[in-house]
Amino acid sequence: MKHPGWSRRNVLKGTGAVLAGAAFSTRVMAAAPPPEPVMPALIEAAKKEGQVNYYTSTDLPVAEKLARAFETKYPGIAVRVERTGAERVFQRIGQEYASNIRAVDVVNSSDAAHFIVWKRDGVLLPYLPEDVATYPAEHRDVDGQFASWRIWLSIIAYNSNLVKAEEAPKSFADLLDPKWKGKIVKAHPGYSGTIMTATYQMQRDLGWSYFEQLARQNIMQVQSSADPPKKLDLGERAVMADGNEYNVFQMKEAGRPVEPVYASEGSPLIIGPNGVFKTSPHPNAAKLFQSFCFSREAQQLIVDVGGLRSVHPQAVEKPGRKPFKDIKTMKDDAAAVEKESDAIKARYTKIFRV
Image (cartoon, rainbow, N blue to C red; front, side, top):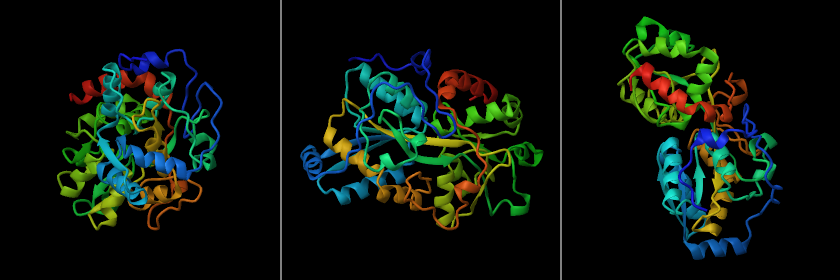
């Protein structure tokens, strides 16, 4: 089946697909497959293939650590990490399919709406790793085609060398204070799936007028959601209006001068699923890698090293971080993001002139 590339808005039109809060709820297309444990036969078949191609929007150091952990556990199988922003991941796969190129094995995106599109187009493989069967129902697709591999927040943060704790912003509204003019950095929804999702939630809850006021603060505009924390660390800006919570955790725990802030209005909630493509060039290695990604070992790794959140029932939060249960979050809605993505990009670009 040849795809001319995907149009997210057209694909979703008329479907009952919705991802509300942290819940996956899609139109049932087939019975969910039974859970599959990792068996010796799968490992041997994967070793014969020798490689797995992982397309991901996860920050590269985290994705590389995951890849090395897999290669250590399963010697002889190399993980080729292809990392870029979520919107670029989506575009690349669409372009490859349009050219009849089948290169992706496993995909992760910080825009959960992508999985609604891929599922609707019938390109995802129903495959249920044994660990995923233990996940809360709202974090696994009813047909076993994808599940919540990572969860994180888009947060405010500040450089503690430049801003005193008592003077730091406590809310999104605080960022509109004239004292922050020329001191704020933020990422772009046209590049980052995290920021696309965050922008949708914020304009829904705070209104576009909020962004119009924020734009008057002489914002430093960057691309990836990983970029604002880096600008803070370098001291190029004092505050970030959005960006990855997990990068802030990594930097702070490495002794860098960054501090997270959980806005009183609620922090945007981001869900990054994983899925396997039906046309995977390394089908056994893809299954093995997918199973590894959802194992307690890998999930604890992305928590401890990556600063991410996990819904694996045996994963534990790292001491010193604010517990997820104590954080007020905004409500995710991937289907709404999908329907409004083009309009969000256009309006954002017009407001910020970028």
